[in-house]
Length: 330
Length: 260
Image 1 (spheres, rainbow over the protein chains, first blue to last red):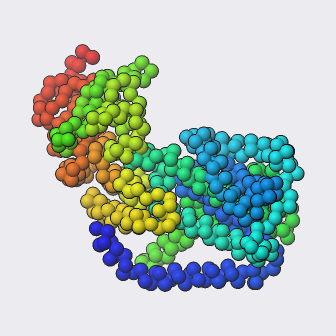
Image 2 (image 1 turned 90 degrees about the horizontal axis):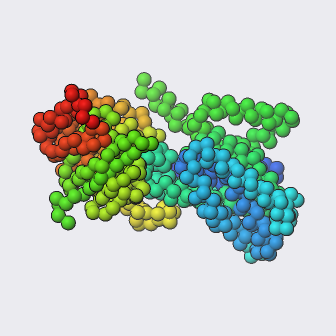
Image 3 (image 1 turned 60 degrees about the vertical axis):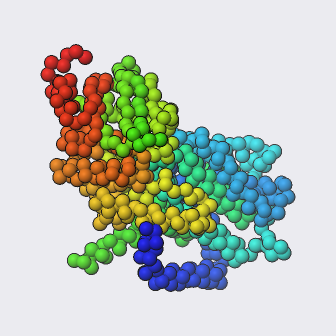
């Protein structure tokens, strides 16, 4: 049976394989050449958007694939940032090690909070996840001895490997770009597997999913922890880039930003959060010319895009292809 | 275990909702390789009884045994893993994925690759990926949806969606397939095709227990029938026996049924 399928799929493979390889090469060249082609400010935005790509892609795992609208995701971004910052500044752990530790620590925090929130449905889940990040923000603000309270943590060092320090913008860009590529690659692998199908089964119909043997708690918790791990990693990358973090990282603004990235880009798709993250990072900056109207215009653009493309910008491709095929046939 | 052993056994199963007894102390059993139907007039408690077998409803009293093991308190997904797979009265599928993908999702129970397998692309992961794809295509051909494999499941016609639902359940290769009114809303031709599919499913080794309204489906397909009315079992037997049974005729036609 499987041999038969293998033979069939072998036939068209070489051409697709070559195209894919070419695409990967072009993308790699674009990433490598990017720092040389743009000014420092654009590079700064690119670094922020690559971090946003990781955060938004991880939120998409819960929101787009398992179908649970979590408003607590900014908290995981914040937990990762604080974990890495505290480890390196207060405990003196090397930056690179602190950053690597941020992901598992954040995933573990999701493992603790997950069983409490994940059995809640719909609006209850949304409200409780939101309260979770708000409560955590209050703890960070008030536990001054441990977190330095509202002043935040200063002087978070750049990571370094041996004698090489990622202190230049170009080197940090390569670091976050690699992080983003690894994240997307992992999520892609995961979604094209038994685990990913269980995630999507839960999103599509919980009862049918349970009927065929998918444990709701097991798989939603798994997605929640993996997503938190990546969000924590993104938070660590952010902390060591800007070198200063404050409790505002847990705030509503950060959360809404992530949500908009996923919704506008297209939830439940691999490219959606990438498109959304880049757009949400860059577009408001380009609107600086119009000063105080900046965010209002951005808001209108977002509203229009959600109304006109409810499935996100990533859905535009398949839709256009559909029109094209229909036009060609007629 | 012999082939005629009880696969499913229900003992004294009772469900009360706020004082209303929907199902009252029902006993029944389904043997390996049988097609057994549960019928009864509207509001007889069929779906409630069914829900307690699938695990979506908790019984007020009584026991459910599968292969002799007590599963009364087992959650639905654990029953699913054991091989008790159900379909629902209102069509329930995975609408926003392709038909092929939906059926692949159904094979969760028969596969075992985990997160690490997926990330490193282990041999098990690769074997299962190609096997599930091939198996899903085979099941779609079996239910007659081979041509729809790449369409969005939610875009199919009502009758086709009912077949997708069946295909998802079959993909789990159930030991016991529970169907809740599979012929609801189907026309005569579709019902006849469904009856053929159910028979073929049994011939492939799956035991079938179904709740049904449509008598034409029942009579042609079932080995045995249980009849319930007002939450109580009123008859059991072979289709031709049930057709002649006085109590059943009374319950369905409602004539002079005042005893309850």
